[in-house]
Length: 262
Ligand SMILES: NC(=O)c1ccc[n+]([C@@H]2O[C@H](COP(=O)([O-])OP(=O)(O)OC[C@H]3O[C@@H](n4cnc5c(N)ncnc54)[C@H](O)[C@@H]3O)[C@@H](O)[C@H]2O)c1
Image (cartoon, rainbow, N blue to C red):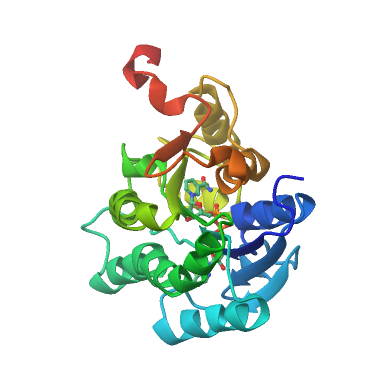
């Protein structure tokens, strides 16, 4: 198994993508902490991994969660920063509080969790064991979906932070990458469709979702398991030379010129 004996900490671990990652990591032999705001996260159910309550935007909360990992393991091999929220608005519609909240979870959350995990990751690296951080960017950090201004801005920030962290901590043996999904079928995506953030143009929900599938070269959305496959590889020793990169996984969506299909 790829992750035998590794210790992993996954934020958003009860969400759509985070849960699939926890499931996959456990199957690969890792000992997994599923960290989330609530026991049921966005999916409204439990799940794999040991649940740890935390709010990634709160310094003391993040520190307490990682203190627990330190006490129980003394090291950490894999940190996945998958907690995230979306605000489905243009900047004109977005209040300052909503803007700050989106940055607090998506950007500050990634900063705080990584900051408090570094000493534990360093312990693993010093013992010549693997140490890696996987952040969650988005294809929205490269190109914009309409009506998601604050979210797009946070993901661009996560991309830049990923590169900066990779430069700073690579010499210590800590790899840092970001996974940048396109559309993935999770509660976040369902909320995006119900908020009609894509400017549905009078289409029914089914028509809107089919239109979005059709625009993908692969003619479907991603599944959380598709994303977990890439995360699992990035976390494994097979990816030992991979760092500082933004790994887009979007069924080819961002490879095409959209206008050619109109
Ligand atoms: N679903 C997509 O289409 C998509 C596309 C690109 C990027 N992403 C990114 O992937 C990551 C996972 O998204 P998802 O689709 O699984 O979303 P999701 O809404 O299903 O899960 C997100 C999880 O984060 C948790 N969370 C929110 N605020 C938190 C906080 N302050 N502290 C701790 N946990 C908190 C939620 O409780 C939830 O369980 C996010 O960073 C998201 O931006 C998702």
